[in-house]
Length: 317
Ligand code: FO1
Image (cartoon, rainbow, N blue to C red; front, top):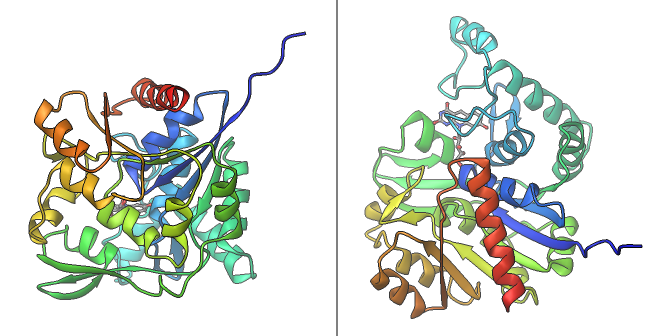
């Protein structure tokens, strides 16, 4: 009788699109038991409904229904409900919520109103969408990211979607995060983990809001499992999203070395793209072990290739 190969427990820390693409790579490897711990700082309320963009992006990506060109929302979704809201001059119709997507927001809001925790609700949703992975909000409490801009204090989606990320950013804060706590499910995922991966998500907007939650930084930094982060920059450019402009606004360098130094003490190794020159690798190596791999996850096969290389690194240490 052949023995079953050991299952490797991988925890991925994820924001939106970069996190979802990293998670889909591990989700396709049969020997991996995957938990995705997701940022809730982007969550907000629209038309009386709770919207959780990062959780939903991971859900839609792992279940294969995501709108691939956008990276968020459901493929081929219509906006008939939104058209009605616009006709009725309802507020906040700048956030494009598709009809299929609205079904999820209605379900989630009802479940929360009936007293369920977000973790329970998303666990049911993930099962019904056929996910093999655990989809874990980092906290069940609300801790919205606030963007301090030249136009005043904006909630994350107001800054990113309504104002197209244009107003110059002076700082970021994570309301209530220091008083919020991580869930038991997240703590357990960390205790059991064999490998912890910080996805190539925006460090300031996706990972920092999680690290600001009471106890979360310690969970990561004191974990016995090897920890690795992947740079969201390739040759000084972000694959998607406002990272470079945000770093410029905050007068911080848009380099992989600066991001590696941001994660110093939190991870054992930092991955930069294979296209990066030797100077970038050497710069990262000042802070921690530098690894070079193909990091552009433009399709499922490339996500799986990166996940496979991270597992090979794990085996080699
Ligand atoms: N991003 C946009 O650029 N415009 C939108 O209208 C928009 C709507 C939207 C609705 C649901 C959802 O789950 C995500 C949505 N996003 C939209 C993406 C979202 O703002 C970002 O992906 C994340 O918050 C950043 O990770």
